[in-house]
Image (tube, rainbow, N blue to C red; front, top):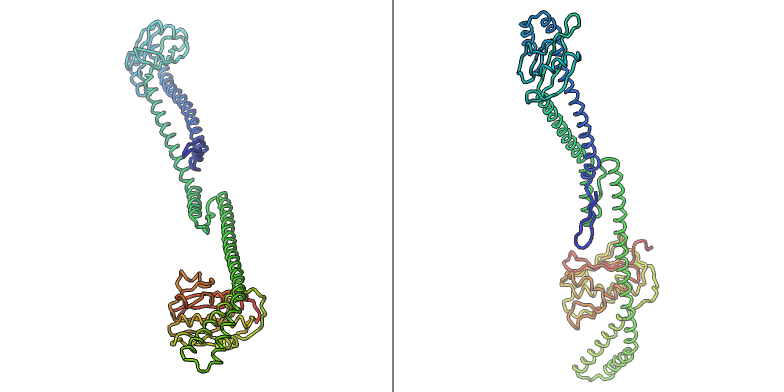
Length: 495
């Protein structure tokens, strides 16, 4: 059934549908057998019909034989004529002829085209046997049945000929063939319709459902499954397809998980490499700038201490020098904090203690209208297994970042939930845009104007959270700004 089509430079194999296959391998052979069987049955029926029609002619002849022989023996020709006229009502005959022993016709009904010659009559009468055959008589094919007529002593005294046109036989057989052909055609149509309907009800619609489900899977709906309706074979096929789809979905899920894990590992590796580079930079900067900065700060402090009569402008200049030196020292310290990878010295400490220490370490704000920090401390306070200094530093950086971004409100609270324990810092500032959110914890990234931020504060927070196997998340706040969640004790951590 397969054939090859050439398209786009490559051969594609034609796959017939199940309906076409059933039609070709089941319905077509059945129809051929039905046609052959019908033809054989019709041939047998034609033979039986022909024999029956001939038998009708023979019965007419047998019915007339005795009365005609008796009347012919007594010479009652009028009675012969009457008998022949009555015989026309016995059956569908074309002509009836009675001949005497000399071969002369003595009586007849119907057309005379069926008459035979005197010599033929004598020959048939002398033969003394009943004969029947088709022959050409009067330019028309006739079926003739010859019956010898005998007297009481058994002597042949005449011959009876009963004829029927061959056209009668042919017409009846044509009607018979037409009826049989119509029945065969009707049977074929009914069988085809029943097969197609049965195929649709039992197989076709279920196969269509399978094709639709597989199309949806091909479009990306990997959770789609094939219904197991239909015959046992289709049910088993559906279970096999669903098992395959389950395996494919598991494979996709596993691949996605591995891909995400690989991306996370790559991100962590890149961050670790960046942190290592920052650590090396910080160590070099601290080594190269530590002594000069200490010298500058010492000289400015000595000048302020030893010179009591310095003009106010000069004294203010020395104070600015010391402030900038302190700022530079803080930047170096933050660089070292970002790149630090030293083991943690964890201790179990109360969250209230960390909050209290962090609030006392907040740097002086440059803005005269810096908002106060609203502290919400529900009791009891959770305990956190952290390194106190680094935990305080992370909280200080978060509070200082929120205070710089806030308009009027900064809110601090701790929490103890299923996803861990830590702190929440919120502000009512402009928030963090979706474009900036993925980068806020990267070193040197800042949204502040030049000179107002180093981009290291939140990077230090992220580094400390990672060191404690926790995390820091950023979300919109109910205050209108940003909400930072610092997890220092992940789930399962004692404390």
